[in-house]
Length: 319
Image (cartoon, rainbow, N blue to C red; front, side, top):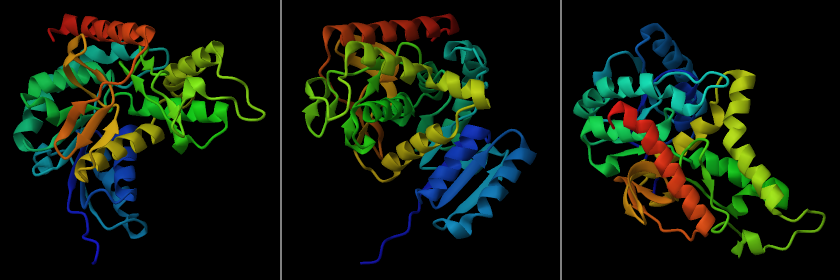
């Protein structure tokens, strides 16, 4: 039976380094038949789209549009929002909140009007607070608005574990939960390698034990990775572009894939009225059921602290 070509339409709002790289990743993975790149800078967005379109010969067939007209997003299956204030070296994610929340207040109602059936994926920092704001201002159901959350953090986490333990990163199953930021919570208790709980794994030959000191260093490096990259090159782009494109694929292909996306939690243990990341089923409907993962008392307390921190950041903005 011949493979049916993809027919999905994906709109990417913001043609900066993250938006353009994410659009490139979506095209390279063949996730969409049409990609609309939108930005208020008409000259820049059309140039970005033209640059992408010139490479279509070398990737799965698709149509690329670059525009400053938001109505071009009509009919999108997924709308990825990367537009927002740019993080500067030494600046925390929460420092970005005010300008970007103001942007969501004006932009999300218009996007929801143009593409009311789309799943919205927020990839703008501070992503958890921005996801909460986007959900509030759009008026859309919980499932339709989610954030990239700790999908990238979890990828960094798995990479660092794999490097220390000495296995392929694809064999590491581990998540970071909570805020995509300084209060992120590595879930060591639920982490496994080849079905073996990570904390019970005997060191492989020539490898050091995964001591508390090592775990603390890995957790630090996960949280501070973005700051190092921003200090060195001005912005993160490749890994978040790939992470965002993978979320897009999970939605378009109705994969029911478990991913630590940020979504509104209500009645998740003692957490409620906050957007943060826990392993969640992602499908064509968007953010589905959050999974209850085993937590140590320390991890549960850290997750509550992360939720409290996010609420404190949102409160001054009336969220």
